[in-house]
Length: 176
Image (tube, rainbow, N blue to C red; front, side, top):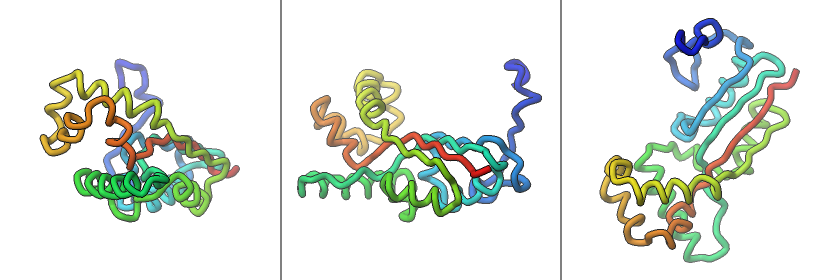
């Protein structure tokens, strides 16, 4: 941080996202990048983020949610099985298995206003899939059992592999 000239601006602390070691209303911005789906629970994190934000403070998140159910019964079944595998592998608490509307409701319940939950799945998953297929070192980071669908379905199956997931950007503000 010193090399970046940020030592006076940013203070890092170790702690739980659901019990932050910070006083009330002390932060201007809370960010959570691809991590809130792991928190026990996301709702507890949202309440804690609201607590530590000053009036007018902002929450910015990138998060993974459950995708809305597919119209096709077969794809909807695949989504349920795929989400279950994702949640088990990446330790996602059952309470965090919400869709965009559910997260928007959680933001409102925590007290946030002007909340937006925008899907970016179409911009994220195809590129991630291509990178995984092209980069052997990246692929080696995943267990062989997780790579099976990638190898079996190939580029044509990318939409199915990620059908259970909705990658979102979240922006919300604590009222002034």
